[in-house]
Length: 380
Image (tube, rainbow, N blue to C red; front, side, top):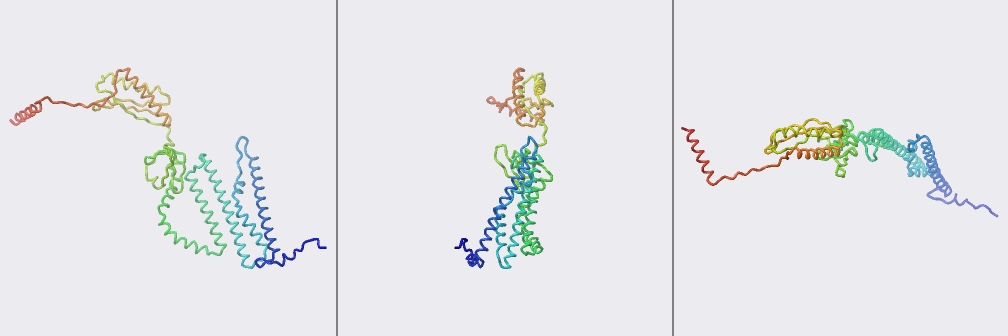
């Protein structure tokens, strides 16, 4: 009596020119490899993350270490490809397939190294961004953006050239052909290249950085991101304004980041019939009002000149804080106090006056006759 099943038919049954037993062994090896690699990856991530949490300083949030973040960049599709290649390696394949399998191995390893490298660049750029004070998510300085873009480009170009070299492509001839075609491409994308060089100028010269409040071309807002081609500004009205870097640098940029105080010049006018001693008291009163306000330095207040129907004053003071809202509060306080003191002095603010002179009947004829008589005497 036969107790064990007869597996001989597996060796006799052929699938794609190979025995079913060898195909079954290859599939089993591929599945086992995928499961094993996935379990090892999960175990390594948990182990490294736990170690990073234990190494974190007390009172600070635990952060995954660099190794844990690199492991998070492992592609499960590449793990699946590696498992399939392990299974293919256990089959009795023709000679030409061994070369292809080795090329696929190189492709999988090169792409995975590229993914790890890209993740490492992202972590390094993020730490650079935090170190330089840009703590809000989604914000990136020009130097960080350019550094990230340049490093990722170099990384993936290197990976691509390595893969092409492994496939038997002549890299020297390939690069030479790219150099010839690069001239035509550069002419076609010269506007994009102009914005790219403009972003490099922003990164090096630093006319503004992420987080600065700027005014350019009638747009006032906070810089959110300086990209390779465009700069994004959050306007005061709430919308996001996207400007090309080249167009941005062609205009005058007012940057308020280094502003420590605000110099204010304002003017007002009083009635032209005001007595001289009251006109002198007005300038003195303005100085008293401004000196009594905290965080304000009084500069001057002068009776500037005579208007068409007014006496004009010019006042200058400095707010020792760049806040625009604070300035408006102070200006409102000055205006209200000045209005009350002018009423106490009995001085009226100037009101535009229009004079209309109505000539009496026959007055025009008399004026003409007088003018003619004067001209006749002058000639004699």
